[in-house]
Length: 306
Image (tube, rainbow, N blue to C red):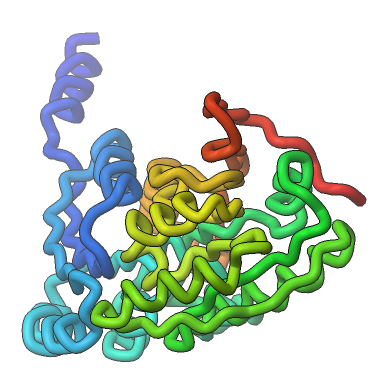
């Protein structure tokens, strides 16, 4: 009995399992990274995390990764990436030399860094923030008029937005919504004029805001312009909701971060990355914003039409 007690005390005294992680971000830390850090701690890991923040600058990120991360690549156990842009750039440089755990990527298969053939995913796994398009439109159709067109602003540098366009067009057929795309120049110097142009072109429409990295980076000004012109919006990312979109069915960034941490835990416990399927938030949240004086949240949105 004394020996057993001694062994238990010894186990409790052991330090947490150490992990060294490179964190590649596009627009700084979000609730996803807070959830990721907290969940790793809860699971018993002592993590050293080195942050490489692009601050929404592709050139700066490429330089940072080549000059700062790659020389230290051997030191890292995992590469954590947030968003399509950061993941694409990191994967092109790291290739398959280190396990990569991506987070908040709408369509990793379409973006080209997750294969439908799981045998090719031995060094990559991750989490998608995508909520089924049918569910997004089913919820939005209960609050927004069906006689308006859906206008989808897209950044030509963001491949995922065009993939979203295809999904939106197909899903909208069940709700009598017509869909049109609207190209926005991803240039901060042109933003004011682009927003004025959007206000004019979308004055009779509903604007669908996909989780595009550039659109997210201008979320406060974008939503302010659309709301000022009384243009209703459907939003598919948490950040848009924070700035007053009309209807959003969204994944919790904190939950996504925790799921990314659990992927690492499962891998540490012996599960191969290719055997860990793409993770998504099982409980997306319906949020109503600029539809009146009351803002309410529903944690159990209705299922889409069959």
